[in-house]
Length: 77
Image 1: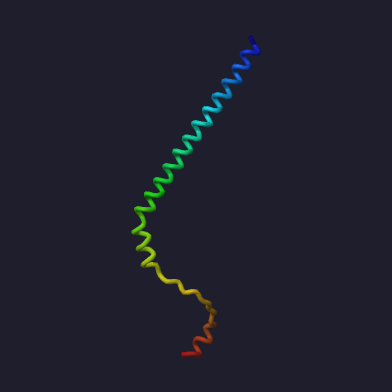
Image 2: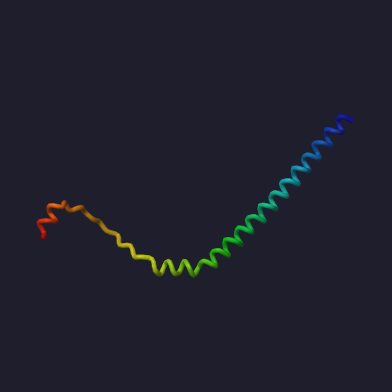
C-alpha cells in the first residue's frame, strides 16, 4: 500500500507540474500578445507627434571649437 501511495503521489505531482507549465505558458503567450497589441496601438497613435518632432527638431551641426583667451579677444576690438 505504501509503494502504491508513493507512485500515485509522484504521478499526481508530475501531472500538476505539467498542468502548471501549460498554464504558465498560456499566460505568457497572452501577456506577450497583449504587450504587442498595446505597443502597436501606442506606436500608431503617436506617429503624428513623432513626425512633428522630427520636422521641428533643430539641426545639429557637428564641428570643433577652441577657447580663445580673453586677452586675444580684447586685442581684436
